[in-house]
Amino acid sequence: MSDTTLSTAPVPARKGRGPWARAARRLWQNRSAMVALGIFLLIVAACLAAPLYARWAGVDPFQSTLDAVLKIDGVDVPVMEQSTEGLGLGYTPLGPTWNLKHYFLGADNQGRDVLARMLYGGLNSLWISAAATVLTLILGTAMGLAAGFFGGLTDTVLSRILDVLWAFPIYLLAISLSIVTLSEGLKIGPFVIESGSLWLPVIIIGIVYIPYVARPIRGQVLALRQSEFVLAAINLGVPGGRILWRDILPNVATTLIVFVPLMMALNMLTESALSFLSIGVQPPDASWGTIIQDGQALLYTRPWVALAPGLAIAVSVMALNVFGDGLRDALDPRSKIRLGRD
Image (cartoon, rainbow, N blue to C red; front, side):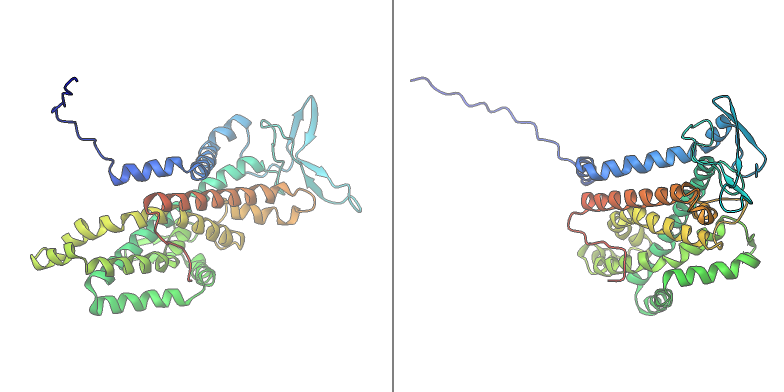
């Protein structure tokens, strides 16, 4: 019978994954979320390439070209074709050529390339939704942190402000603010924002959605305020600002990250609605909402003028929502974060 020798050499400890690494791994394994992110990034990349495409195709999406003539397969084709309906009065824009070099999606009622205009409009829509999201998160987080941590009169005042904003239907409040600022612009102290500036829809959309962020953050801070590590810091005399920055803010960071794609989707829909009503992005700038408005009168003859930006909005919003759901599940599978009033 042979003796068995047991090794007494220490076994190296297995290095554990941090919470962010585990979240990234869960997100990477979520195929639907990654596909949605890939689709959205493709849309962003295409919009960023708008100047390159316009230069390559030789078009100016902001200049009317009613008398332009294209040469397609050796044949001269006018951008504005003589109408063949009824008495033959008026002109109909060129339809889709499905040729990237020549009016791929056709022309609008001003003879402008729809595809080039849609890419430029997408730049504005994406920028406005992203900037409004950042503004909402900054203001909403500041109000939620202050109300939940300091309580008392601070909580009362801030909560009543949030209640006032919450009392108005989102689109009614956004439309009202847009109409007021559209004619006179906006003056904030020494800063003056002109009526046609893209910053106006950013500020308006950023303000109307503050309660959607501030209220959940306030609820989380109220719970964290009673946790042992926060109470210990308070009893040790640590300044409130330091506690908010070092202890509470990192614990609500996951919620803020989840809010980014979800708020971008909401802001994109709101911007498109305002621009469609002519109280959002103003000419000569364009957005997906203004292009849909331009194509409203051409739905029966040149439907792609309105359908193309509409599909771009739908796909972008769907991709952001699917990715946002995957991001929420990856960061906190037990989270019940929802954007809504239920």
